[in-house]
Length: 260
Image 1 (cartoon, helix red, strand yellow):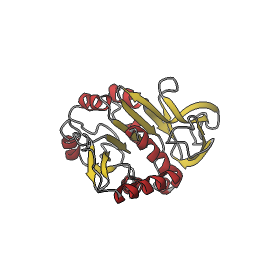
Image 2 (cartoon, rainbow, N blue to C red; image 1 turned 135 degrees about the vertical axis):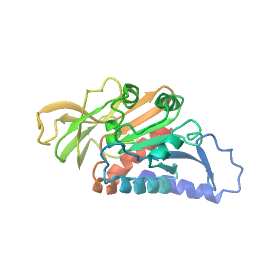
Image 3 (cartoon, rainbow, N blue to C red; image 1 turned 90 degrees about the vertical axis):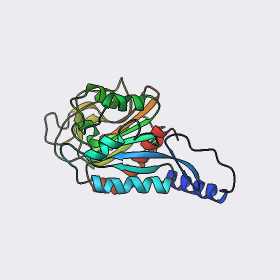
């Protein structure tokens, strides 16, 4: 994870120069000894199936923020948290929101206002079942860029890296071999997003068309108004969160949504 090491070294240099004057924090930033750091709100509340990987995902994301120096984390874990934190007032000090394995209608008090908040220049990161969230809200699915349809057995795939310059996939080379639960989506969204990872055949997951040639989305990025959206369908397995390539994939997506 060379990018993380570089950022950590830069952070140490900033700390050594802490006596210098610093600009005040902008909205959505936390002031530390090293200066303003964007705050990322990690939402893990579920209204349907709950993944066991949520606990390890929270720990990994917190560590990625600390070691990279890119962001600070806060957490939204319960229905009460959602009602309190996913509001205009609750998001006043937040730069980006992550939906990490959320499911169902999680009860955001004003979903349209939340989407407007993203479009006004904030970031959204969706991980795995963020696309299995708000099936009853077309505006949310339009923001995200697609909708989960189904999945089969866990399987190994070789994902094609479509945008090698993007920080979420720049470390992966030409292909990314990964074992996880592989989602199938409602549509091919290639023309409406920036594809980052795709599959050129259906996974060997026991479902129809397994192994057949195809063009399937797996991870993407897109502009949403003045905001940025990153989504990866990976992140089901606890063990995947421990893998460096996947951690860098998530960190690169967060970095891009933050514009850093």
